Amino acid sequence: MSSMQQPLISHLIELRNGLLKAVASILVIFIGLVYFANDIYAYVALPLKNHLPEGTTMIATGVTSSFFAPFKLTMMLSFFLAIPFVLHQIWTFIAPALYKHEKRLVFPMLLSSTILFYAGIAFAYFLVFPVIFGFFTSVAPDDVTIATDIESYLNFVLKLFFAFGFAFEIPIAIILLCWAGVTTPAKLRQKRPYVVVGAFVIGMLLTPPDIISQSMLAVPMLLLYEVGIIVASIYRNKDEETDTQEEN
Image 1 (spheres, rainbow, N blue to C red):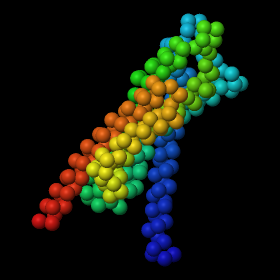
Image 2 (tube, rainbow, N blue to C red):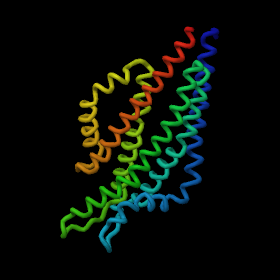
Image 3 (cartoon, rainbow, N blue to C red):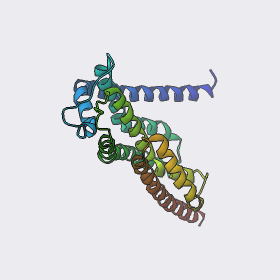
Image 4 (cartoon, helix red, strand yellow):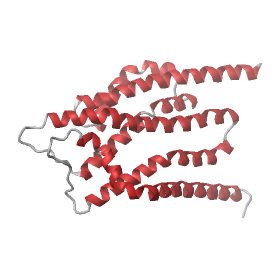
């Protein structure tokens, strides 16, 4: 075996071990939560159940829906809760290859991305869901009984969880693009009109077809876009100061 192959194999083994640890962390959390799967689903369904007309409830139209819907939700929750440990494994793998100034940026980015993802999910659950479910139930015709299937509800909320979770990562994406030299804060400011249109198009594609939920995704995206530009400008100025000091 050549000397070049040995470091490659050791890196692959390290990557495999990191992936196994990440998967194991998800399974450990899942095992601890699966007993409470029905309670977890009941909690996630509260925004809809609070707006259902009196005497109505959610239903399970599939033979296995009553089992697999809570099971699926618990698995996704286990993944969400394991994200900090998963990102730690990523950090452990890439950190040795980074320069000192790169480490100074990457670790805060990993931490901030985790917090922002959780913030996006919390924003969807506590602010968006009550509004859109209240709106949908209020506009239903009088002769229509609202009885949402638990599987379709789960798919709906998971879609919005991911949509808002990733939307809240916009500042991180902007900072990384500026850091990599792909763009600059000044260029991003010039693209504001296109970003406004794009945010509402994304809101239209990822949320229900109503202006309320579309706006509740698009407006935070635009605000986070501005936050990303501000933070990227600060990092850029700090890097320029550091480069100047090193030259002197």
